Image (cartoon, rainbow, N blue to C red; front, side, top):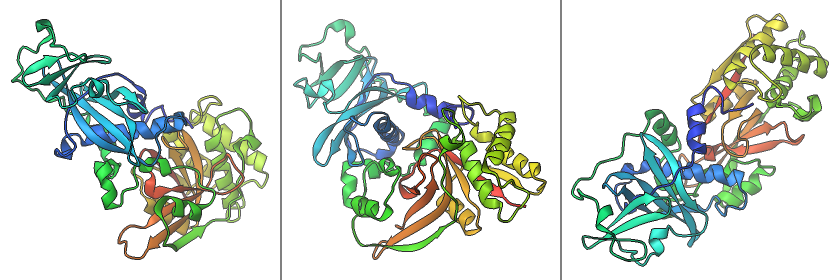
Length: 399
Protein backbone atom coordinates (compact mmCIF):
# COMPACT_ATOMS: atom_id res chain seq x y z
CA UNK A 1 0.00 0.00 0.00
CA UNK A 2 1.41 3.39 -1.03
CA UNK A 3 -0.04 6.43 0.74
CA UNK A 4 1.38 9.31 -1.31
CA UNK A 5 -1.33 8.63 -3.87
CA UNK A 6 -4.87 9.91 -4.14
CA UNK A 7 -6.11 10.69 -0.64
CA UNK A 8 -3.31 12.22 1.41
CA UNK A 9 -1.23 13.68 -1.42
CA UNK A 10 -1.37 17.16 0.04
CA UNK A 11 -0.28 16.01 3.50
CA UNK A 12 2.48 13.78 2.19
CA UNK A 13 3.99 16.58 0.13
CA UNK A 14 3.68 19.02 3.01
CA UNK A 15 5.74 16.71 5.20
CA UNK A 16 8.39 16.00 2.59
CA UNK A 17 8.94 19.61 1.48
CA UNK A 18 11.85 21.28 3.28
CA UNK A 19 12.48 25.02 3.03
CA UNK A 20 14.34 27.26 5.53
CA UNK A 21 13.19 30.38 7.67
CA UNK A 22 12.58 31.48 11.38
CA UNK A 23 10.17 33.35 13.90
CA UNK A 24 10.14 34.98 17.41
CA UNK A 25 7.42 34.29 19.96
CA UNK A 26 7.95 33.35 23.58
CA UNK A 27 6.60 30.12 25.03
CA UNK A 28 4.52 31.96 27.60
CA UNK A 29 2.46 33.63 24.84
CA UNK A 30 -0.97 32.42 23.78
CA UNK A 31 -0.24 28.97 22.34
CA UNK A 32 -3.26 29.13 20.02
CA UNK A 33 -1.29 31.61 17.88
CA UNK A 34 1.31 29.02 16.91
CA UNK A 35 -0.57 25.79 17.65
CA UNK A 36 -0.53 24.49 14.07
CA UNK A 37 3.13 25.40 13.64
CA UNK A 38 4.08 23.50 16.78
CA UNK A 39 2.03 20.47 15.80
CA UNK A 40 3.70 20.53 12.38
CA UNK A 41 7.08 20.56 14.14
CA UNK A 42 6.01 17.57 16.27
CA UNK A 43 4.82 15.79 13.14
CA UNK A 44 8.18 16.46 11.48
CA UNK A 45 10.07 15.11 14.49
CA UNK A 46 8.06 11.89 14.49
CA UNK A 47 8.40 11.39 10.74
CA UNK A 48 12.12 12.11 10.71
CA UNK A 49 12.75 9.78 13.63
CA UNK A 50 11.49 6.82 11.62
CA UNK A 51 13.53 7.80 8.58
CA UNK A 52 16.71 8.52 10.58
CA UNK A 53 17.26 6.40 13.67
CA UNK A 54 20.33 8.47 14.57
CA UNK A 55 18.45 11.77 14.75
CA UNK A 56 18.59 11.93 18.54
CA UNK A 57 14.85 12.70 18.73
CA UNK A 58 12.59 10.28 20.60
CA UNK A 59 9.43 10.13 22.72
CA UNK A 60 11.06 12.32 25.37
CA UNK A 61 11.68 15.19 22.93
CA UNK A 62 9.66 18.27 23.81
CA UNK A 63 9.32 21.90 22.78
CA UNK A 64 11.17 24.06 25.27
CA UNK A 65 10.59 27.55 23.86
CA UNK A 66 9.25 29.34 20.80
CA UNK A 67 10.52 32.36 18.83
CA UNK A 68 8.66 34.45 16.27
CA UNK A 69 10.55 34.99 13.01
CA UNK A 70 10.05 37.96 10.68
CA UNK A 71 11.35 38.77 7.23
CA UNK A 72 13.31 41.98 6.69
CA UNK A 73 10.08 43.73 5.69
CA UNK A 74 8.74 43.03 9.17
CA UNK A 75 6.25 40.35 8.10
CA UNK A 76 5.72 37.49 10.54
CA UNK A 77 6.62 34.37 8.56
CA UNK A 78 6.87 31.52 11.07
CA UNK A 79 8.24 30.15 14.35
CA UNK A 80 11.38 28.46 15.59
CA UNK A 81 10.87 25.73 18.21
CA UNK A 82 13.81 24.98 20.49
CA UNK A 83 13.73 21.38 21.71
CA UNK A 84 14.77 19.69 24.90
CA UNK A 85 15.05 16.08 26.03
CA UNK A 86 15.12 15.33 29.75
CA UNK A 87 16.72 18.69 30.51
CA UNK A 88 19.28 18.59 27.68
CA UNK A 89 18.96 20.69 24.52
CA UNK A 90 17.80 18.58 21.60
CA UNK A 91 18.10 20.91 18.60
CA UNK A 92 15.45 23.08 16.99
CA UNK A 93 13.00 23.29 14.08
CA UNK A 94 12.05 26.39 12.09
CA UNK A 95 8.54 26.12 10.58
CA UNK A 96 7.62 28.67 7.91
CA UNK A 97 4.26 29.68 6.44
CA UNK A 98 4.35 30.20 2.69
CA UNK A 99 1.01 31.08 1.18
CA UNK A 100 -0.85 29.09 3.82
CA UNK A 101 1.26 25.93 3.56
CA UNK A 102 3.77 24.98 6.25
CA UNK A 103 7.30 23.70 5.65
CA UNK A 104 10.46 23.09 7.63
CA UNK A 105 13.07 25.63 6.62
CA UNK A 106 15.84 24.85 9.08
CA UNK A 107 16.48 22.26 11.76
CA UNK A 108 19.21 20.69 13.86
CA UNK A 109 19.27 17.62 16.08
CA UNK A 110 21.68 19.14 18.61
CA UNK A 111 22.53 22.80 17.99
CA UNK A 112 20.80 26.05 18.88
CA UNK A 113 19.58 28.33 16.07
CA UNK A 114 22.44 30.44 14.74
CA UNK A 115 20.86 33.62 16.02
CA UNK A 116 20.89 32.11 19.51
CA UNK A 117 24.67 31.79 19.56
CA UNK A 118 25.39 35.19 18.05
CA UNK A 119 25.98 37.04 21.32
CA UNK A 120 22.60 38.78 21.12
CA UNK A 121 20.47 36.16 22.88
CA UNK A 122 18.18 38.85 24.30
CA UNK A 123 17.32 40.43 20.96
CA UNK A 124 13.93 42.12 20.82
CA UNK A 125 13.17 40.76 17.36
CA UNK A 126 14.59 38.22 14.90
CA UNK A 127 14.60 38.75 11.13
CA UNK A 128 15.23 35.97 8.63
CA UNK A 129 17.00 37.08 5.46
CA UNK A 130 18.10 33.80 3.81
CA UNK A 131 19.29 30.34 4.90
CA UNK A 132 21.47 30.74 8.02
CA UNK A 133 21.35 34.54 7.64
CA UNK A 134 19.55 36.61 10.26
CA UNK A 135 19.37 40.15 11.60
CA UNK A 136 18.64 40.92 15.22
CA UNK A 137 16.90 43.99 16.58
CA UNK A 138 17.97 45.32 19.98
CA UNK A 139 17.29 48.77 21.42
CA UNK A 140 15.89 49.90 18.05
CA UNK A 141 19.11 48.99 16.24
CA UNK A 142 19.59 46.20 13.74
CA UNK A 143 22.62 43.89 14.06
CA UNK A 144 24.18 41.13 12.00
CA UNK A 145 25.00 37.77 13.58
CA UNK A 146 28.50 39.12 14.16
CA UNK A 147 26.95 41.75 16.45
CA UNK A 148 27.81 44.51 13.99
CA UNK A 149 25.29 47.21 13.12
CA UNK A 150 23.56 46.16 9.91
CA UNK A 151 23.98 48.25 6.72
CA UNK A 152 21.24 50.78 6.04
CA UNK A 153 20.37 48.95 2.82
CA UNK A 154 18.80 46.03 4.66
CA UNK A 155 17.10 47.92 7.51
CA UNK A 156 13.35 47.42 7.33
CA UNK A 157 11.68 50.57 5.97
CA UNK A 158 8.48 50.21 7.94
CA UNK A 159 9.29 48.66 11.32
CA UNK A 160 5.97 49.75 12.80
CA UNK A 161 4.04 47.59 10.33
CA UNK A 162 3.69 43.93 11.21
CA UNK A 163 1.71 41.68 8.90
CA UNK A 164 0.41 38.32 10.07
CA UNK A 165 1.25 35.24 8.00
CA UNK A 166 -1.44 33.89 5.65
CA UNK A 167 -4.16 31.67 7.08
CA UNK A 168 -3.00 28.07 7.19
CA UNK A 169 -4.59 25.75 4.66
CA UNK A 170 -7.73 24.54 6.52
CA UNK A 171 -7.28 20.91 5.42
CA UNK A 172 -3.77 20.83 6.84
CA UNK A 173 -4.87 22.63 9.99
CA UNK A 174 -7.66 20.13 10.59
CA UNK A 175 -5.28 17.21 10.27
CA UNK A 176 -2.75 18.83 12.59
CA UNK A 177 -5.38 19.62 15.21
CA UNK A 178 -6.40 15.94 15.18
CA UNK A 179 -3.13 15.31 17.08
CA UNK A 180 -4.69 16.99 20.10
CA UNK A 181 -3.38 19.97 22.05
CA UNK A 182 0.13 21.31 21.53
CA UNK A 183 0.52 21.41 25.32
CA UNK A 184 1.43 17.72 25.51
CA UNK A 185 4.50 18.43 23.35
CA UNK A 186 5.63 21.38 25.46
CA UNK A 187 8.34 20.87 28.07
CA UNK A 188 6.11 22.32 30.79
CA UNK A 189 3.46 19.78 29.84
CA UNK A 190 5.32 17.26 32.00
CA UNK A 191 3.50 18.55 35.06
CA UNK A 192 0.24 17.55 33.35
CA UNK A 193 1.38 13.98 32.82
CA UNK A 194 2.42 14.41 29.19
CA UNK A 195 4.51 11.72 27.56
CA UNK A 196 6.21 13.95 25.02
CA UNK A 197 6.08 13.20 21.32
CA UNK A 198 3.50 10.46 21.58
CA UNK A 199 3.83 9.56 17.92
CA UNK A 200 6.98 7.64 18.80
CA UNK A 201 4.86 5.13 20.69
CA UNK A 202 3.16 4.06 17.46
CA UNK A 203 5.58 1.21 16.87
CA UNK A 204 5.46 -2.55 16.72
CA UNK A 205 5.19 -3.86 20.27
CA UNK A 206 5.98 -7.54 20.90
CA UNK A 207 5.38 -7.34 24.69
CA UNK A 208 2.52 -4.96 25.39
CA UNK A 209 2.66 -4.97 29.19
CA UNK A 210 6.41 -4.32 29.31
CA UNK A 211 5.84 -1.47 26.89
CA UNK A 212 3.21 0.04 29.21
CA UNK A 213 5.55 -0.12 32.20
CA UNK A 214 8.42 1.40 30.20
CA UNK A 215 6.26 4.14 28.69
CA UNK A 216 3.53 4.96 31.23
CA UNK A 217 4.86 3.55 34.49
CA UNK A 218 3.52 0.85 36.78
CA UNK A 219 0.04 0.40 38.23
CA UNK A 220 -1.90 -0.38 35.04
CA UNK A 221 -4.30 -3.32 34.92
CA UNK A 222 -6.13 -4.91 32.00
CA UNK A 223 -9.69 -3.66 31.59
CA UNK A 224 -11.02 -5.36 28.45
CA UNK A 225 -9.66 -7.49 25.63
CA UNK A 226 -10.67 -9.67 22.69
CA UNK A 227 -8.71 -11.43 19.96
CA UNK A 228 -9.93 -13.25 16.84
CA UNK A 229 -8.17 -16.48 15.88
CA UNK A 230 -6.45 -15.48 12.62
CA UNK A 231 -3.13 -17.04 11.68
CA UNK A 232 -0.40 -14.47 11.05
CA UNK A 233 1.28 -14.84 7.65
CA UNK A 234 4.17 -13.14 5.90
CA UNK A 235 3.25 -11.16 2.81
CA UNK A 236 6.42 -12.55 1.23
CA UNK A 237 5.03 -16.08 1.65
CA UNK A 238 2.40 -15.24 -0.94
CA UNK A 239 4.70 -13.36 -3.29
CA UNK A 240 8.16 -11.86 -2.78
CA UNK A 241 9.59 -8.49 -3.79
CA UNK A 242 6.20 -6.87 -4.45
CA UNK A 243 4.01 -4.35 -2.62
CA UNK A 244 1.33 -6.77 -1.44
CA UNK A 245 0.63 -5.96 2.23
CA UNK A 246 -3.02 -5.16 1.45
CA UNK A 247 -3.45 -8.37 -0.58
CA UNK A 248 -1.89 -10.38 2.26
CA UNK A 249 -4.19 -8.75 4.83
CA UNK A 250 -7.26 -9.40 2.69
CA UNK A 251 -6.25 -13.04 2.16
CA UNK A 252 -5.86 -13.59 5.90
CA UNK A 253 -9.24 -11.96 6.57
CA UNK A 254 -11.16 -13.99 4.00
CA UNK A 255 -9.43 -17.19 5.08
CA UNK A 256 -10.81 -16.46 8.56
CA UNK A 257 -14.31 -15.85 7.16
CA UNK A 258 -14.30 -19.25 5.44
CA UNK A 259 -15.47 -20.97 8.63
CA UNK A 260 -18.81 -19.20 8.15
CA UNK A 261 -18.84 -18.81 4.36
CA UNK A 262 -17.87 -22.09 2.73
CA UNK A 263 -17.76 -20.77 -0.85
CA UNK A 264 -14.44 -19.10 -0.03
CA UNK A 265 -11.59 -21.35 -1.27
CA UNK A 266 -9.79 -23.42 1.34
CA UNK A 267 -6.55 -23.26 -0.64
CA UNK A 268 -4.74 -20.13 0.55
CA UNK A 269 -2.83 -19.70 -2.75
CA UNK A 270 -6.04 -19.85 -4.79
CA UNK A 271 -7.62 -17.30 -2.48
CA UNK A 272 -4.63 -14.95 -2.77
CA UNK A 273 -4.60 -15.18 -6.56
CA UNK A 274 -8.33 -14.45 -6.77
CA UNK A 275 -7.87 -11.39 -4.54
CA UNK A 276 -4.90 -10.19 -6.57
CA UNK A 277 -6.90 -10.39 -9.81
CA UNK A 278 -9.73 -8.35 -8.31
CA UNK A 279 -7.33 -5.81 -6.79
CA UNK A 280 -5.55 -5.40 -10.12
CA UNK A 281 -8.88 -4.39 -11.65
CA UNK A 282 -9.00 -1.63 -9.04
CA UNK A 283 -5.52 -0.23 -9.65
CA UNK A 284 -3.18 -2.58 -7.76
CA UNK A 285 0.36 -2.85 -9.13
CA UNK A 286 3.29 -4.89 -7.83
CA UNK A 287 5.45 -1.75 -7.49
CA UNK A 288 2.82 0.76 -6.35
CA UNK A 289 0.65 -1.39 -4.13
CA UNK A 290 -3.08 -0.94 -3.60
CA UNK A 291 -4.83 2.46 -3.68
CA UNK A 292 -6.28 2.70 -0.14
CA UNK A 293 -9.45 4.41 -1.34
CA UNK A 294 -10.24 1.33 -3.45
CA UNK A 295 -9.99 -1.31 -0.73
CA UNK A 296 -13.73 -1.12 0.03
CA UNK A 297 -14.53 -1.83 -3.62
CA UNK A 298 -12.09 -4.73 -3.63
CA UNK A 299 -13.74 -6.25 -0.55
CA UNK A 300 -17.18 -5.90 -2.13
CA UNK A 301 -16.01 -7.62 -5.31
CA UNK A 302 -14.36 -10.45 -3.37
CA UNK A 303 -17.69 -11.21 -1.69
CA UNK A 304 -19.38 -11.17 -5.12
CA UNK A 305 -16.71 -13.49 -6.53
CA UNK A 306 -17.81 -16.14 -4.04
CA UNK A 307 -21.55 -15.47 -4.57
CA UNK A 308 -22.15 -13.47 -1.40
CA UNK A 309 -23.78 -10.44 -3.02
CA UNK A 310 -24.80 -8.92 0.32
CA UNK A 311 -21.21 -8.64 1.50
CA UNK A 312 -19.75 -5.15 1.30
CA UNK A 313 -16.57 -3.25 2.01
CA UNK A 314 -16.52 0.11 3.75
CA UNK A 315 -13.71 2.65 4.15
CA UNK A 316 -13.60 5.00 7.15
CA UNK A 317 -11.32 8.06 7.20
CA UNK A 318 -12.31 9.57 10.56
CA UNK A 319 -10.78 6.95 12.80
CA UNK A 320 -11.36 6.09 16.45
CA UNK A 321 -10.50 3.18 18.71
CA UNK A 322 -14.21 2.40 19.05
CA UNK A 323 -14.37 1.54 15.33
CA UNK A 324 -11.85 -1.25 15.80
CA UNK A 325 -13.42 -2.41 19.05
CA UNK A 326 -16.88 -2.62 17.45
CA UNK A 327 -15.57 -4.68 14.54
CA UNK A 328 -13.67 -7.12 16.76
CA UNK A 329 -16.62 -7.43 19.16
CA UNK A 330 -18.72 -8.42 16.12
CA UNK A 331 -16.13 -11.04 15.12
CA UNK A 332 -14.85 -9.10 12.13
CA UNK A 333 -11.20 -8.11 11.59
CA UNK A 334 -10.38 -4.76 9.97
CA UNK A 335 -7.64 -3.43 7.73
CA UNK A 336 -5.69 -0.45 9.10
CA UNK A 337 -3.93 1.61 6.43
CA UNK A 338 -1.39 3.91 8.06
CA UNK A 339 0.27 6.98 6.58
CA UNK A 340 2.79 7.56 9.37
CA UNK A 341 4.69 6.00 12.24
CA UNK A 342 6.44 2.65 12.25
CA UNK A 343 3.96 1.27 9.72
CA UNK A 344 4.10 4.23 7.34
CA UNK A 345 2.54 3.43 3.92
CA UNK A 346 1.61 -0.04 5.17
CA UNK A 347 -1.56 -2.07 5.66
CA UNK A 348 -1.99 -4.36 8.65
CA UNK A 349 -4.79 -6.69 9.74
CA UNK A 350 -6.30 -5.73 13.11
CA UNK A 351 -7.58 -8.85 14.85
CA UNK A 352 -7.85 -7.81 18.48
CA UNK A 353 -7.65 -5.11 21.10
CA UNK A 354 -6.76 -4.61 24.73
CA UNK A 355 -7.40 -1.71 27.09
CA UNK A 356 -5.64 -0.88 30.35
CA UNK A 357 -6.77 1.32 33.21
CA UNK A 358 -5.09 2.83 36.25
CA UNK A 359 -6.69 3.73 39.54
CA UNK A 360 -7.11 7.47 40.01
CA UNK A 361 -6.87 8.29 36.29
CA UNK A 362 -10.25 9.13 34.78
CA UNK A 363 -10.77 8.85 31.03
CA UNK A 364 -7.13 7.89 30.71
CA UNK A 365 -7.34 4.30 29.46
CA UNK A 366 -4.50 3.09 27.26
CA UNK A 367 -5.81 1.34 24.15
CA UNK A 368 -3.87 -1.19 22.08
CA UNK A 369 -4.59 -2.95 18.80
CA UNK A 370 -3.42 -6.51 18.11
CA UNK A 371 -2.11 -7.03 14.59
CA UNK A 372 -0.98 -9.40 11.92
CA UNK A 373 1.49 -6.95 10.40
CA UNK A 374 2.53 -9.06 7.34
CA UNK A 375 6.19 -8.77 8.36
CA UNK A 376 6.16 -11.27 11.22
CA UNK A 377 4.38 -14.51 12.02
CA UNK A 378 4.09 -13.36 15.63
CA UNK A 379 1.38 -11.05 16.92
CA UNK A 380 2.26 -7.38 17.15
CA UNK A 381 0.61 -4.48 18.96
CA UNK A 382 0.40 -0.75 18.44
CA UNK A 383 -0.40 1.86 21.08
CA UNK A 384 -3.55 3.43 19.66
CA UNK A 385 -3.56 5.97 22.49
CA UNK A 386 -0.38 7.38 20.96
CA UNK A 387 -1.43 7.16 17.31
CA UNK A 388 -2.20 10.59 15.92
CA UNK A 389 -2.71 10.80 12.15
CA UNK A 390 -3.40 9.79 9.35
CA UNK A 391 -4.88 6.78 7.57
CA UNK A 392 -8.04 4.81 6.96
CA UNK A 393 -9.86 1.71 8.15
CA UNK A 394 -11.36 -0.79 5.73
CA UNK A 395 -14.23 -2.77 7.25
CA UNK A 396 -15.90 -6.03 6.21
CA UNK A 397 -19.70 -5.89 6.22
CA UNK A 398 -20.46 -9.61 6.16
CA UNK A 399 -23.42 -11.09 4.24
